Length: 317
Image 1: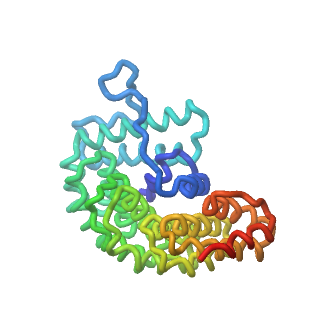
Image 2: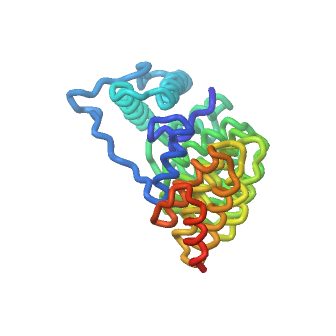
Image 3: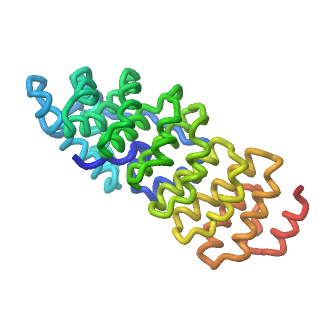
């Protein structure tokens, strides 16, 4: 059972880089669009993936689900044409219905099943969209198996219930020794914050995650989390992160600084100066990453005219 991808990325049917850049543009305005695709009972609906008969043993049922989830994962990363995206969406609906068919049994496997069944169940229950899964999923964050924890985080993010307490997610983000698990925690936090969850319990771990030397995706997602919660105290750290050698992280940090500067009027000047420092000191590639964030903050565009930007910034508090 391999760990499944974050629903936050899969929902947009793109690889991590494309998804994160999309979130940078839409920071604070990302929404889930209802898919115009056939549902069970519709004439166009055709089941995809293994049959997963309801009379199969729960082990066989989970194994078939695992095969379909792996295919869904792969399509999430590769689907680009409208036909492939539609197939991905249909497969997601199919998985959702199959999880609902034996939801109680799958939930029981998450809580008391053998390790392999817990791994699959942890990643599957979120597809049902049933809030009854939340408490067992939160309990699964203390499971000794890293894949159970990682997949439970994916399901928590897929559920995106705003009442979800973020303390346990934050504990995993800060303390897990597995970089993929920390990545899943950062993605789950981003999903939950976007859904309106109380940020209590995630701010300090997200600040700590900005320094995650092993996994750039953790640094980038942590920057987005801090921007969404309006943590202006992290501006200095985010300003340093703009110079990160990984473009994905650098771009996320610049977008986060811009977002915070727009959210808190008292921080506009500081955010502008941090972005300008990177624009002034960075190489051409960094300038091209930072420039859109500065334009968005300023509401005006001086291209790469440093004197014009400096004059504008001097007028700020």
